[in-house]
Length: 184
Ligand SMILES: C[S@@+](CC[C@H](N)C(=O)[O-])C[C@H]1O[C@@H](n2cnc3c(N)ncnc32)[C@H](O)[C@@H]1O
Picture 1 (cartoon, protein in one colour):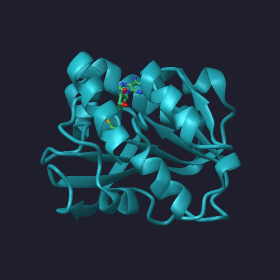
Picture 2 (spheres, helix red, strand yellow):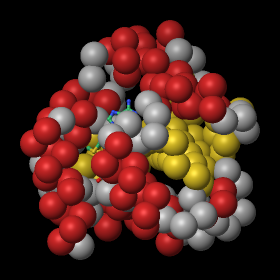
Picture 3 (spheres, helix red, strand yellow):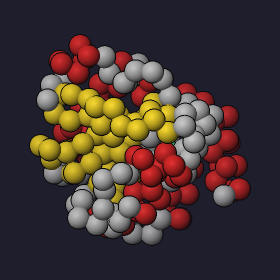
Picture 4 (cartoon, protein in one colour):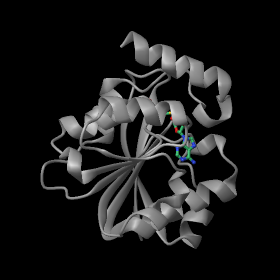
C-alpha cells in the first residue's frame, strides 16, 4: 500500500534507530512468523508492528482480532494501526512495558523489533518482558537479518532459554532468518 510505504519511510528518516530496517517485512516473512498460529492459539502479542505487515499475517493465520494485542512505540504507526485494525488492542507503549499492561498466559509473542540494533541490556529486558507474559509453553518468535540469534548462548543460558531456527525467508528485503525461543 502506497500510504503505508510513505509512512514507513517517513518514520525511517525521522527515527532511524527505532525503525532500523530498509523496508517493511514481506508477506512471505509475515506468513513464516505466524506459522503454527490459528483460531485456537488463544492470546497472541506482537512487539513493534510498524505498519502492520506481520499483524495481518497473524490475523490471516486465523487469530481473532480480540485475541491480539500490539505494542508499538511510534505514535504515527500506533495511530495508523488504530485506524486500520478494528478489534485489535493497541498499546502505544514500549514492548518492555508489556508485563505492566497485560496478564500473563499468552501463547506467542511475535516480534518485529530490531533487536540486533539494540544495546544488549535492552535486548534482554525486551526478551524477559516477553517471557514474563508468556505461558510456560509459550513461544517468542523473532526474525533477524544477521547470521546469529539476537541473544548469545551465554545470555540464553543465563535467562534459561533455548532457541531453534525457523525458516530462512529469501523473499524479503533483506532475506530474514526466523528464530523460535522457548523456556529451556
Ligand atoms: C523494523 S520495524 C518493523 C516493522 C514491522 N514489524 C515489519 O516487520 O515490517 C521496527 C518497529 O519496532 C518499533 N519499535 C522499536 N522499538 C520498540 C520498542 N521498544 N517497543 C515497541 N516498538 C518498538 C518501531 O517503531 C518500528 O515500528
